[in-house]
Length: 300
Image (cartoon, rainbow, N blue to C red; front, side, top):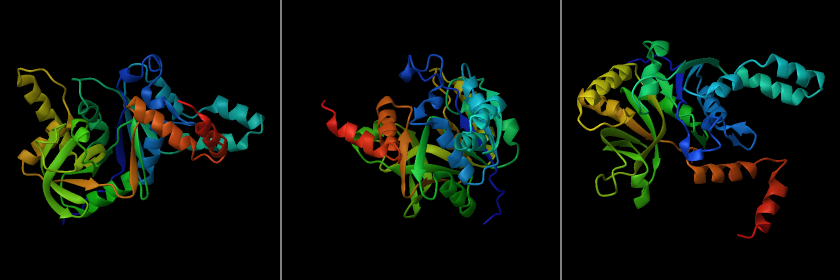
């Protein structure tokens, strides 16, 4: 087994328009929608930091400045909280900007979820890196990022991709799936990945969700996928699965790892976002009892 460099850097793509949440996202990033009292993207950042990530680059776009402001050092707000004696809130606000070293870059290039990863190539350099999407997160112990980084260090290969068990017919229309050779109960050596295959096209329950760790050669694979896309007659988006398939063509080893003891929250979906808000609202000690009683009394 080769010795791998420590995973210190993370990329969080957050440049999408959030059209499914319009008009709420007309002037507000979907990643900043609150799950009770914390924006979605903060859960994502905290997940990354739990695995020892030191540097985080968030790939943004039009109308995403509030994401930068959220992770900035807010002197004026801190002064007001201090003058008002709100020391608990002051400590919480200070902790946000101290979570990691934050960097921001504007997305440019073809449409698709591989583009923001490619945009961060100069920041990452010749190091392995973590990718988490800005509008979805997992609640797991150990965290999703901890499990991914650990698996990446233990497995020989170029990529480790988070997955969960999904085997209902409708799931195969919502997720990408990996198929291949089982290495252990929760690890699959990938031989094939198909995006939204339909239940008849793949024999696997390894549904791919947000979260991956890559060797830096992933950037070269994305660039090759970009050139291939230009040669295709049918226009489509540049997706990270294109690059994974190129790594597989090159004989690189890639793994799908099922995240243990966790639950996936897809907050880019309106219904799943509402479910997430309700679930986390019921977890808050100061809200649980009264909110629970309110929900019981609702008549639909």
